[in-house]
Amino acid sequence: MDGCPICLSEFETNYALIPDLDCNCIYAVHDECWEKWNYTCIYCRTYTIHNTIEDLVEVYSRLQQRKNRVRALVAIVFYILYFTFVKIARTYGFSQILP
Image (cartoon, rainbow, N blue to C red; front, side, top):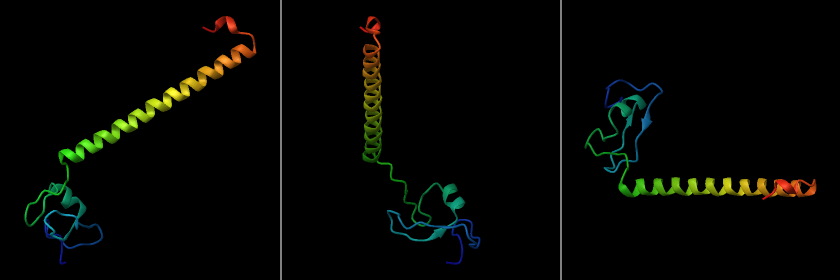
């Protein structure tokens, strides 16, 4: 490896190996060069970011599950606070404010 195949300058310390390409090309480039190159293979131009419909659906479903878990947690906390309030109100004789 003589240098970065994009900018053609020598490597010092800031480079990244890009082994996970669909085209199986393996080489090293600078991080900044790779970002500017728009994530396509330098040699065969294969696009390397995996954003298929299936990937996007999986990300969306994970976000929905996380959102549902947060809603359930909020509901549990609400009910705990409500029943604690009811118990305290009954204990101290504030039953006239209870529904």
